[in-house]
Length: 377
Image (cartoon, rainbow, N blue to C red; front, side, top):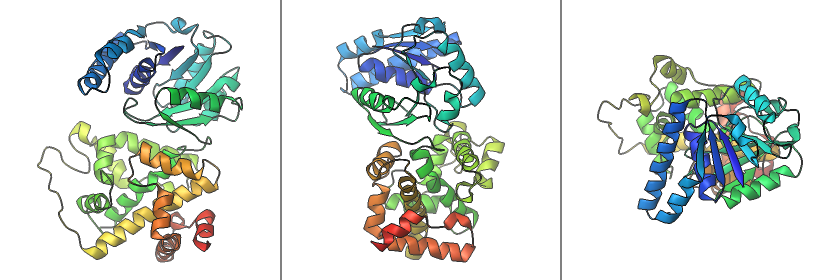
């Protein structure tokens, strides 16, 4: 089988490597020769790391790298079975690529986008045959992250999502099918982990260090502020803003001024040496937090997360099993959010949110209908 990948950045090269290690021939297209060269170097380095950790034999590593070809012309993908686009998150740029690609590939070639936040249905509209178009959202880094979201557009052929799910699972990944809504599963459900943490910080109730400490005490591998610094504030803020706008400016997805100011200052996190934390200085960690503060911060953030997860299932975006698996595999949460909600007691989650709503009188704290239903059971 032959896969075309358009865009040789971290996502494109990672997707190409995953497919090559599963036995597919991969044609990696990028108009920039330096980007192509850099991608091959990064793939080689990644494969060598897997070999050194004994996760891949030297023979299989050599074979996988030998199945990857860097190309300077899109025409090379003429006989591809599937092409995945992984370029910049801009609708116009992506549509332009799809219009050109459709003139090159066969009528049976599957065309996919790796978008993390744009409407798959809107992108499909650029094609003359949108029924063969679908979203296949890998997480960064694709080689290590197990989760892939499969997102059919309204126009997508009804049989295609299951076909893609089988292909992605044959590549060693867990593929979950989601409805084409802003943020899909993970980027929708995970928003409160960042936004409610920033809200608590903006109100002066706790510092980033304290909030990170509290959430890590409850099993999260990274606190929200350290994680935003790791992801990059340009990326994290863009996704938050994109989801907020796509949901008609729903206040529960509203971006924060504190994060916007970091973006405007160029303090984008670890990659720039400064974000919520200053990485040029020795980082001072917190070793203890008052019990009342710890409980308050944790319950605010986890209640918002559980509410969002329940709402995602209630709206038919994905199944209960999918939403819990998605957060464990896509953002490394220690437990599924529905599982966590049942553990805490759904009524307690409802009470926490109702108290916040009555105190602030803000729509962001409204309890979704699905959660109220679960609390009655």
